[in-house]
Amino acid sequence: MILGDKSRVNIRAVKVNLILFEIISSLKVNFHKRLLMGVNVTGSWLVEVSVVLNCKFGHVVFLYHDIVVGGDPCLIRFWFPLFNA
Image (cartoon, rainbow, N blue to C red):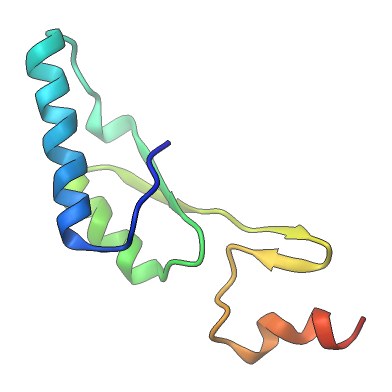
């Protein structure tokens, strides 16, 4: 699990670190077997990052106290469970 700010610089840094890990440890990182998942991140951003990292992408969506974790807080319907409680 890698946490960080949503930026192209951080994505490139992650890729460089994984490649350096391959070189230093002489182990192989299977980029195509990795799964990139984002919380409160747009799908287009995940697609863009998955292309850079050469991996698959998925979505984290679950309910916590009737609030969708992984949903888009910019949408009005995201906040309906709070007002309807």
